[in-house]
Amino acid sequence: MVAKLKVLIVEDNFMIADMTEDLLVQSGYEVCGIAPTVNEAVTLGLLHKPDLALIDLRLADGGLGTEVAARLRAAGRIGVLFATGNDASAGMPDADGDAYLSKPYQTKDLMRGLEIVAEIAATGAVAPPFPHGFKVLGRAYSKPAETTIG
Image 1 (cartoon, helix red, strand yellow):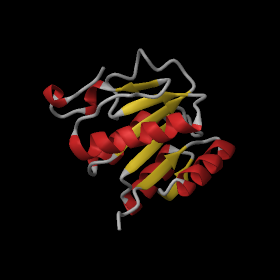
Image 2: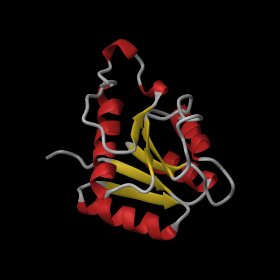
Image 3: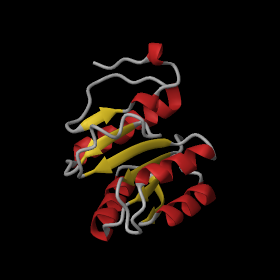
Image 4: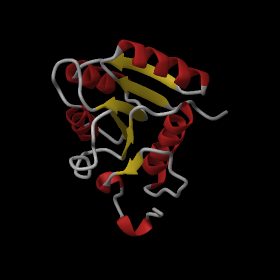
């Protein structure tokens, strides 16, 4: 039996967070927590040690999702998919995460995005197809020569 991947949802919009949790559970993921702030996200992440984190860029406490990713990654490997309704193309390439997905996104795009991030976390490489609004970040790979981005 394949173990379920654990996902931490970092989202300050409770309706989006709740719907995302339902979708992930129905799709076979284990949601280990929902956090609307940087501190709550880091606490849940350190406690549950998720495989993946779906992180909104702007959070309830005025904090940034990039801080959550950096603090969780300092404690160990975790696949990070940022989600944002903002234009992330300028500031995201240096973020400590694997990829970002632009909001609003479709369910299939979110699911494929999480699959890609899990693949990056497991192997350090990924191949298309990429979902609409999805971008792999420059720091996603430890060995750029192994990547397949097209």
